[in-house]
Structure formats: structure tokens, C-alpha cells
Amino acid sequence: MRKSFASDNYAGVDQAIMRAIIEANSNDVPAYGNDQYTARAVEVFKEHFGQDVDVYFVFTGTAANVLGLQTFIQSHQVIICPETAHINTDECGAIEKFLGSKLLAVPTRDGKLTIDDIKPLLTSLGDQHRAQPKLISITQSTELGTIYSVEEIKQIVDFAHQYNMFVHVDGARLANAAAALDLPLRSFTTDLGVDLITFGGTKNGMMMGEAVIFANKKISNDFKFIRKQGMQLGSKMRFISAQFIELLSNNRWFDNAKHANKMAQLLAQEVAKNPYIRLMYPVQANGVFVKIDPMYIPLLQQEYSFYVWDEVQHVVRWMTSFNTTEQDVYQFVQLINAIVKG
Ligand SMILES: Cc1ncc(COP(=O)(O)O)c(C=O)c1O
Image (tube, rainbow, N blue to C red):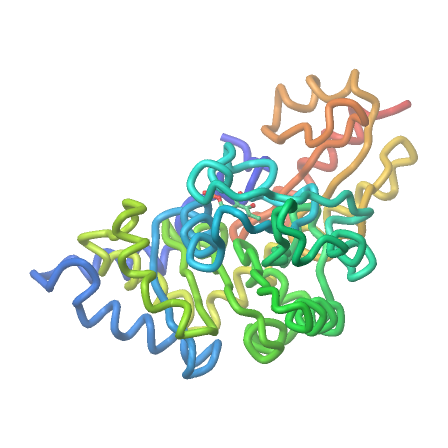
């Protein structure tokens, strides 16, 4: 079967991570995270994000977001996020259902929030008739494949804290951002005062597993209960933990993400040569968004799977992953150029 450009979730499991799962399968260990793998995985996270963080593992990114945010937010409070945020578009209203709180989704040019977007939303702070903004959620790298600079995140965090609000970073693809910025994970999260990070393993070569990272330990006190009530306390947690150890103790997380980004760059560079294809956003992580004549989309999809991102504007999304090869990209580009000709 051809390589898919639909999503980094379509990719399989990194062989080294598969081996780590098999190695963790050799004998009995305590359940529910009371095992040596989980203890080590937490240590490894602390090496990346700082000793003061509290770390918990869950199965899906949606669960990480919903349960992490539930820890910070009451139902009369508001989460501000970009319109394109996964929590707004692709979590089936889970935030609204489980938190009962309002999402204020703000249109953006490129998937990134700015202080100017947020300021007008704070005029009713303290007004008992209005739900109260309490948390700003940003995604790094964004759902549009763009990346916040360190300074941009710092501005948002400083601004939020000035108004007694929290900041969440949806880091389903945080590794791709670190690789693109060539910076340690903490330098654009915990070092800046981000309160909550949801960190993705699945899209970067794991079979499954995401982490919920709290910079604010007072707040995380109850998370173990929230996770259990939220049905995300894995009894055989060692198998998530062993994957994170393998991913994060070596440079594997960085190399995998860097490779995925590089393949997106290559794809973007090659399709930019085709005059009938328009790149929609700067390609900074592992997603390429292009506008093409809609008549070509089904023809391309007969050969390669990918998603139509915007049915109205005819924008499609092509994602690369840790195991996309240069050959995969060139083969795809060859087909694109054979089909998209006018
Ligand atoms: C930005 C972002 N956050 C979170 C998720 C988590 O998704 P899932 O619940 O499918 O693991 C995704 C998955 O596509 C995502 O793109």
C-alpha cells in the first residue's frame, strides 16, 4: 500500500518503540502506574520539562486535553482558543460535555492566537451575567502546521497571568515544534510559565499514549481522581510508560519529529513548483495545506489518502510522519504533477 499523506496517525509504530513494548512484556509488574516503568517515564519527563512538574499518562490526546482542562476550569468559566483548535473542531464537543464550560473560539489568520485577538474578549471580567474567561488554550505546533515563536508564547502567558488566567498548550505535536525551533521542550513551555501541557506521543511514533503535564502542582492535586473518573487510568500503564521512556530518553522524539518536518518541507518545496497549487500557510512543522482545483481532489485520492481540510475553499491537508521517506514524497509529487495541470 502507498504511503498515506492523511495524518501522522496513519503511520505505524516506530520499531524501537515496538521493541520497548515487547521488552516491557517480560514479567508481572504492579498495575495502575505503580510500576518501575512509569516511575522512570515520569523522571524522563522531568528531565525535559523541569523537576517541578507533575506528569500523568492517558490513552488519547482528546482525553489529555479534556481531563487536563477539567482540572483548571469550572462550568461558569471560559476557555479562549483559536477557531481551528482541536478542542473546538475535533473533539466532538467533549469539552462542552465534560466541563460544561464555554469555548470562545477566535478566528485567526494562521492558527495562532495573539494578544490582540484575546483583549476584546476580556471586557466582561467580573460581570456576574457573563461566563468568565479563565484559560487560554493554544496548540503548538498548530492545527495548520504553523509554529509560535518563544516570544509569542511568552506574550500570551504574561498577558494571561496578568488577568489571573491560565495557559494550556495542546502539544499533540509539541515535538515537531521543538524540532522546528531547534529548542528544548521546556524553553517554550514550562520555562515561560505555561500551566498545562498535553504532550503527544502517538503522532511521533508511539502506538498510543499522551501525557498531561502540570506546571502548577497545587492544581494537579486532584488529577489522579479526575483521570480515574474520566476512565483514563490504564491498569497496564507500563506499556504507555515504556514507550515514553524509549521516545524521550533518546533523541528519538526529536529525530522523528525533525524528519517528519523535513519531509513536509520537501513536499512543500516540490509542489510550490506547480503553478496550479497554492500553499496556504507557512510550512513550519509536518503539515502542508494547499488549495487546488476541486476536480483534481478525487483523482488524487484514488491513489493517496488525505483529508480535504476546507470543502468550501478547496484546501487539502497533506501530513508527513516519522516514517515518510523522500521516495514517498517524490512519488506523490509525480502523481500530483501528472494530475494537477491547469
Ligand atoms: C492538535 C491536536 N490535539 C489533540 C489531538 C488528539 O487526538 P486523539 O484524541 O485522536 O488522540 C489531535 C489529533 O489529531 C490533534 O491534532
